Image (tube, rainbow, N blue to C red; front, side, top):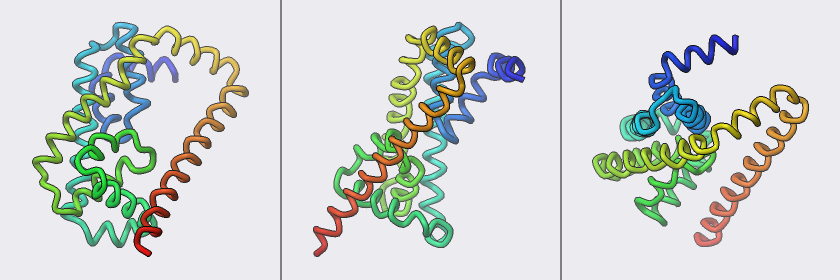
Length: 196
């Protein structure tokens, strides 16, 4: 099964990278960086394709917000806090938040939708978004390209010793999740204190 997956990556690497960048991103970009390291993909083309995928995904979320405000309010009511935080960040920081949203865990899809709900110009969002997407692709693919051999060694050791790797990865993800939840609560509390 693993050989089949690797074969698909070698044969269809660019379309997979594009689609993966639309949906999620970082793991796909790391995979793209490793494949550029092994020579199965072109470094510059991988950055270009991944950036286009990230741009496309955020444009989709932006237009969902722009043309489906009622749907978002009905279906995503459990995400109200994140939408409030995204709106607060946009008001406070302006366009740089569009650039930074790719690195904000838990807000990557919410911020473009939240911006789409506002009257923010679509053309301005698209220009900042494409530049942001290519910078994001460069920043994520380049270390995987440079340290590809080391990453492949870690993956090999992790496969052999999965019983150590799994708890370490789980703990790392839990720490990231906890940190960003506390950060979200901090911003929302600041907003509540200011509104008193």
